Length: 109
Image (cartoon, rainbow, N blue to C red):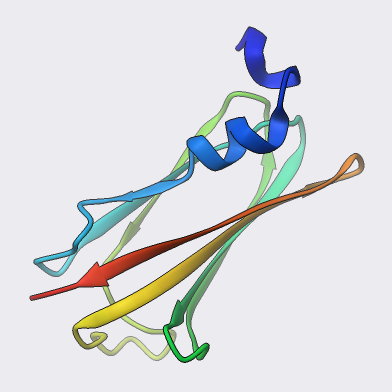
């Protein structure tokens, strides 16, 4: 993890992703890397129109910890989301500041 201090924002963005993408079935896995110690990471999934679909928060992560989140492709009410384009925001916050990346995903089942 020697490169974590070289460019924290790039390392964070490069290590936040969802697979498979596009999502063809009823499950996907988000994965992200904690770049700084004792960080909190939030994941927010939005429709392309900007409506919040799902929100998750992970706290107390140590530097280099890989955090997975298995998504059953449901919204915050527990209903399956429709096919289409979505985007997700992964944000790491700690005493040193905030790192954020925004990426897209597709549901094509």
